[in-house]
Length: 324
Ligand code: A3P
Image 1 (cartoon, rainbow, N blue to C red):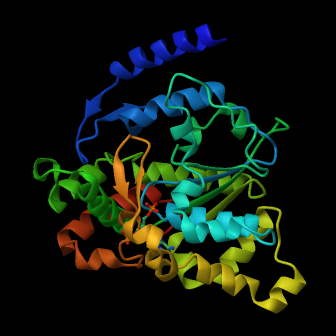
Image 2 (image 1 turned 120 degrees about the horizontal axis):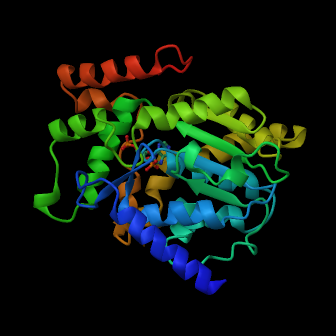
């Protein structure tokens, strides 16, 4: 089996090295695979995940396009799931949410297949992988191990501005910084990490409409406007509904408060901590918390830039039922 996996890894190397390449964001080469731009190191993980992942029916995938609120979704899901038991909930106070569980594709980057059987159930699997590229077994509704998925999407202009700041924040050198004009250009062409962002959202959107019992589609803006209603929805979907007793004792408000931008960004671990991301870069935890606002694009995009992104959004979402 080890030999077979080593051969498969070699095949993946060859396959990836033949894909279109472009380094636009923060110096990490992007590779175009089946319509989406992946950071090259992560694509190894995505391909191996597709080949090697063994789902359990209780698995819950937390899917996002980067800079759409992944950190927030991870924190909320973790706290919702672990509430009631002593210990894990407080982990969110001493660990960055990405260290509670890294993205699943990051486990699969190395040639060795990871053993995830020991993870506590339900296993929370965060991912940036587009829906169409998730392992077949996770998506197959006929399969007994077909998984639940929570998708969090965000308005594209805010996602773009957040991506721009993050990419420049991790770039490490002046030469690899990009201008906002370049970022808008790349983003609108669909060339952003795991982009095009519209296709990423639409794949999950379509699936959530087809199978609402298995795919829950959330919006960053709704979560901001009505956090408690969204927490209740998530808890129900995850099979851990808020009980009458919890309603009475303020548990929902507590979860919202614990996972809020203000709370998490003020924690020592998130102010001074550093972690390695999937591409092997040291990332300051503070970079995961910038402003956490809806509509911050107004501070950063010229009217022309905003119009350009909006035009693409209108064009791509037209007739899909998804709106921002
Ligand atoms: P901004 O750059 O607009 O501030 P991701 O977690 O997918 O990388 O997304 C990062 C974005 O989510 C950043 O947006 C970040 O500030 C925001 N964010 C992080 N934690 C948050 C929280 N608890 N509540 C709301 N927004 C949060």
